[in-house]
Length: 244
Ligand SMILES: [Zn+2]
Image (cartoon, rainbow, N blue to C red; front, side, top):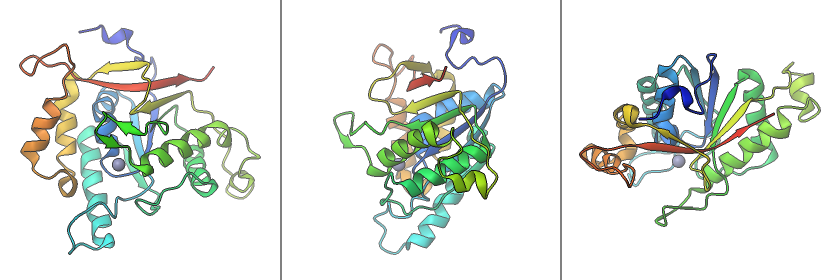
């Protein structure tokens, strides 16, 4: 095990960390171990989810409204397992997220309200996942709109001037951007100590995960290639951008 003091997230002061992603369960799947580790070491983590996941079901008896209600509750429970301070939903429609100016403005507003030190999102350039999946278009749109909100929209008051002029929201510069699900990672954090917490958080997403035993087995199998199921090492990967 590496010395925790040498890790890229061994910040000296408590950090305000905001996670901006598309759907309920994205924070837990993409970086749930890291979130547990950060709250465990005294950092404050909040979520801003752009949709409530109101379309992803094969159950024909469920309406979007019911699904939305259910997914919000599951998300709050999962966030609770990880020690997250606050969950906010922006309620854009699931499946139709587009990285347009309206979405960029909404995220810019939240960045200026929450003034995070560290902002976590996902990689908009990641189109294929493990040669087995197409990365959801909402994930790509969420990542793109968030990067564009961080720079330059949140930084300069003349971007979306109504936020500054009418809503009195001052410009804000985040110190670091952590991009999960990256095409090219430059940070890998050892999550072995937090993998069970991540799985426990994922298990709260009851309407999304199917058979809990299958999920547990699948997640346990995600150990690093040079470790074993008997003596596993788990990692989460990011592209970390540190603004000068
Ligand atoms: Zn998702």
